[in-house]
Length: 74
Image 1 (tube, rainbow, N blue to C red):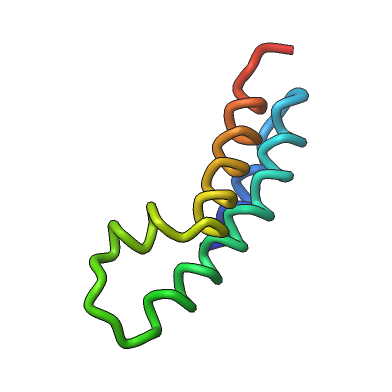
Image 2: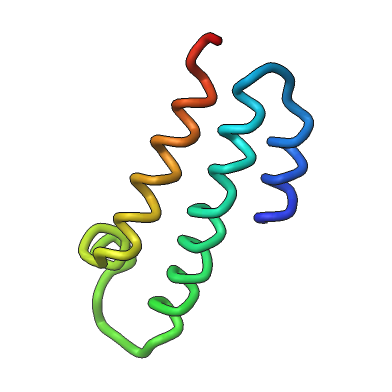
């Protein structure tokens, strides 16, 4: 998934392209973190995992900020 995202981001045009490429790093970190958290045996819901883990939240906010920065007109 991360590879496809980077390919999409690299195919963009304009100044937003660089923001979208940069947003691939927190997305990749979030995917690895999600895999690590859901790989554990637990009774917590996936929604709790996404909203209560501080590192996951930091990755989500960083991705959103970089992605939105890429949408802003130059």
